[in-house]
Length: 267
Image 1 (cartoon, rainbow, N blue to C red):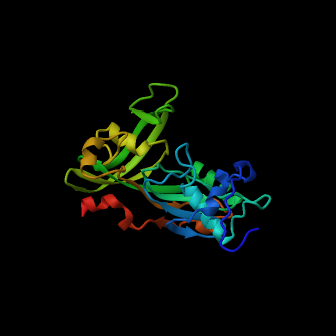
Image 2 (cartoon, rainbow, N blue to C red):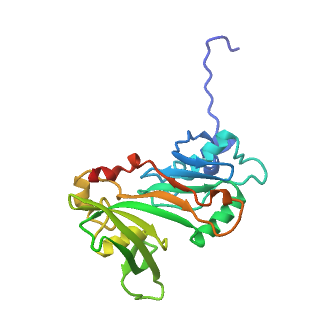
Image 3 (cartoon, rainbow, N blue to C red):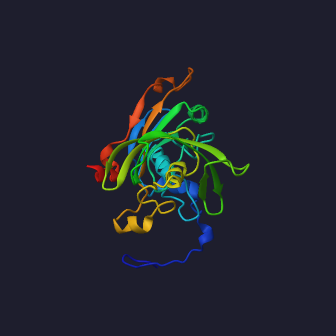
């Protein structure tokens, strides 16, 4: 007979417990988000450098989409156990070590509209980046052709189409400031290919500060830079028709520049 103060130890095999799936793990996640804007249809986040947008083999839970799901789950806006519940989805993505604005759709209609508008280039995304060297001319459009190696997840830029697999790229830029051998550039993507900004500027001899894949990271690391100096800092909605998100038309959202770490190089 047990009495007060007795301790009972049991070994229970794992199969008696329902294992938590990756899809359920976000329910225990304390959401960490820098939300720029949110309504019933969409959510705009300022993603910090170093955070994955989606899971990969190395990281399943601590991702931007998991934090968004956790945020909406706690608000009661996302109920994964409810039949036909729409799972929030990202409409765009940026590299792990790039910071900036990511759009999440909270409804199926918003996802459909935003995917279409991104494809039709009715959203303008602007970036800030720090480049090595002095760029000449100080503004213009870079054109080239990009080929991606899916094995290394690295791209190569060419001045002409050397392969039928190459994709044309266009990158508009304007140099805003120069200091200490670096140039601060505002970039507008005309096309949005993998690593386009990083590879395009490296191709013309001006790699991004802190870029470990396309730059001179051995030297940059000595200066304490862990991430490429690239930030998706501004987003403007420019719809050409009426739709369920037309209330966003003409609106511009911009991150707090105090959070763009490499701007201190130009103070």
